[in-house]
Amino acid sequence: MLKRLLFHLSFIGLFVPSYVFCQSESWLPTDSLDFWSDVMFNSKKYEYRNLGAQHVKDFLCRSQLIHSNPILNPNIVKLMPTDQSFQLYTWQYEGQEGNWIYDGVMVLKSGALIKLTREERDYERIRFETFNADTWYGAVYFYLIPKTFGSDDHYILIGFAQNGNNEKFKIVEPLSFVNGRPIFGKAEFIRLDEGNKKEIRNRIVIRYSQEANCSVTFNEAENQIVYDHITSYEDPNAANLIRFIPDGTYEAYDYKNGVWNYVEKLKNTEVKTPPREHPILDNKSKNIFGKPVKK
Image (cartoon, rainbow, N blue to C red):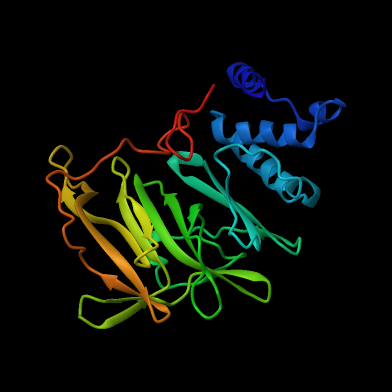
């Protein structure tokens, strides 16, 4: 019903304020969350998507609603560790001129609610930084490794992001807590730089082109994060356009003695053709998992 209503609103170019719905006794807060989520992800106009995003954040920051464990739009991804110490909600929606906007909320086991506030960053330049809830760079976290690491028992998140330059990113980063506040990133990924000197990074950032796909997995038996090796080539059909795609080999990080050590190339991983999939999140007809959105 909500999606049909949104379709009619978009078709005639009108907007019905939220107070109209609030006047109905049968209209519940979860209905409003569903409606505004639909607006945020599917409206054709940026102004409406942005307004929907404001309402979604407002609803998710209401403790009574979030603790009722509402059914969420599938594009709002919820992660929770086995110890249930926190719930992490992240999402993206399309901004202006093909840019993407990221937002999130975290709820601690104590009941404390933490808003994630994004500071827009170049994803290629965040490998050596740490961020807190007020300086978060923005991503949709779709996987939480089901174990903790280090003497402080921190977590490892795997996320996705994209920019306005037809580039996508897979991001792997530690999540720790200091005085009850989240810290994103930790200096524990060790590799050699171009000058063969040891380099310690705070997160893994993998860039690849919009039409490609990049897999990131965790091998629990080996304590190993494995991901596609990305190679670049100049597109013969477009002058001066460099594309980044998997070449059929894999890189990894092994966890040992409290740090992740880089493995440049795993053995026996070459294939004859690079794996490709249709791009995900490239238009509003697909959800966070690349599946068609039901109309």
